[in-house]
Image 1 (cartoon, rainbow, N blue to C red):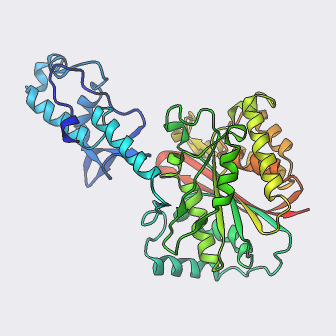
Image 2: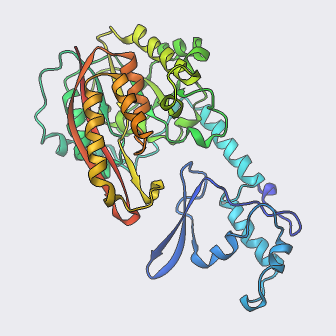
Image 3: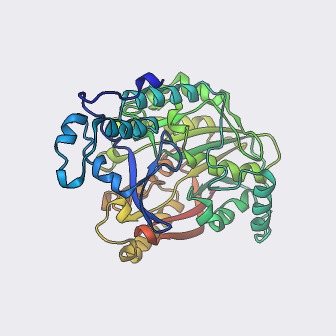
Amino acid sequence: MVDRIFNSVSDPVPGLRNDLDIIPIEHEGKDLIYFHDMLGYTTKDFILDRNAGYFLVKFDGRKSISEIIRQIPESSGKIGENDLLNFIQFLDKNRVLNSDHFKNYSSQQEVAFESLESRPAVCAGSSYPADPKELRSMLDQQFEKITPTDDVSKIKALYAPHIDPRVGLETYIHAFAPLRNLKPKRVVLIATSHYAGLYGTLYDQAPFIGSSKHFETPLGRITNDQEGIEQLRSHQNDLGISLKDRAHRIEHSIELHLIFLRYLWDHDFTVLPILVSSFDELLYMDNGHRGKQVDNMAAHLRKTYGSDDQTLFLISGDLAHFGEKFGDPQPARHYFDQVKTFDQRFLKRASGGSSKQIIDLMRESMDRYRICGFPPLLTFLKAIPDVTGKITAYDLWDEEERNSAVTFGSILYRKS
């Protein structure tokens, strides 16, 4: 793979990848640039001196090293072609340029993932402890604070967040505690897909993304519902589902829920994992192509699992995302009151079990607050309309250092 590293002073230098978050930080009195790669291709914790930004902005995919050097003012000091080439090769080796080396590396990573039998626990060691004893001890301490309900009758679903447990653990505990004494044979897990849009056109015609992989957790493996996956595969064109599961590779929205199930339950159960990407088209029309795909998927889930008392639905989604990190002109604190008002309206309508009511509400503001749990929750409510819910938690994470915030909550659903 080394021979693919960029090595020319006359060819255009590959541009920076446009899917990277390049974040100015200060550490131990030094001004630095931190590269955050959502897809995980870049070397972990890759950091440069802030002064390197002078050159980074010149790597636009059009200019060669020779042209870049000619544009550097003499007052900035002399830099040789080999010096700049060495720097560019350093960037390329760490996969921050949109180069042949990067494209080859990323393709190999994705192909390798697709061939795996099980999905590794990618959030272990960061969002939650990777050590099984430490993780179990942490959860023991939290769940001991909650008296579990003995009434598990008619529980059909749980809508719960996928916020980082380091900031939302209390909400997770309140959400999942009522499931402690359940023993379903199958969990249909419908979750937000955060990364489908980063795979080009791969998922353009597939708002739903399944996976046939088992899921590894520090507390043990969770088995995939292979029968359910084969049923989806046999109708995948009508259902708008892709089983090319690259979007599952680093997705946390399913993994974080499975941690709690594996902790709470010691019986055998399977999971049918379905990621859901954007439903923006539904904000404009009901009967378009996307709307038909959603209706078809909902009909399939209703027919297959709606009356099955051994199937629990788990819906993974947060609520509002707002503030400067998400493109708003003001810091998140300026929106707290209006966001909380909207969230309560959303949760109230969602707990009523009406898919029409929540989509009507979303259309009022055209998803002004970026409710990431809307697509998976709408799918569930269309599939299983005869439920009523109880709001069990609500909270807000104020990321003050980035002037941004995320809200999240939970709803426990029972059959009407």
